[in-house]
Image 1: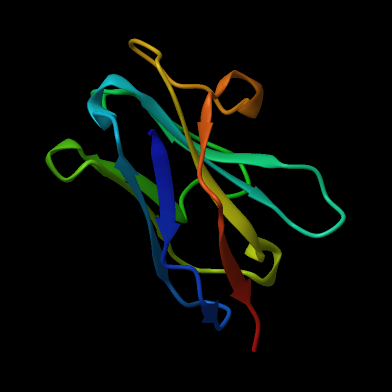
Image 2: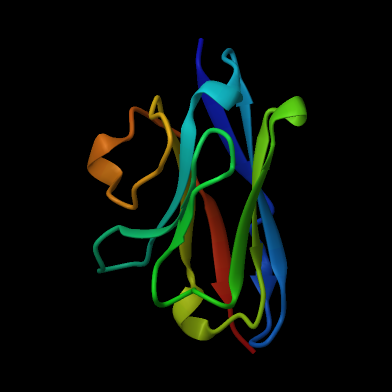
Length: 125
């Protein structure tokens, strides 16, 4: 049974930092590209960042570039999203997703096959 579980979402103040984790079970994560997505109330899902299966290709949405960093530890079957300089506009449910893709990753959620249940990030003073 393939499963992705996100964790790390909390209430944080503007300017603060959070690290989200996406842990896989039931499959070997190093065969998959991983994407982080978010959806705020009343808004469409947005691709935030993605990382290729080897970690050699990474992409970020313009809205988070320079503030967020994606990384993966295939030995721990986990992908991370380090979020710095948080803004209220970062408030959303954050999801990770996996797709078997070689060499690159994409920020379009339509291509991803497996999704986690999401973790809530709230940025507010």
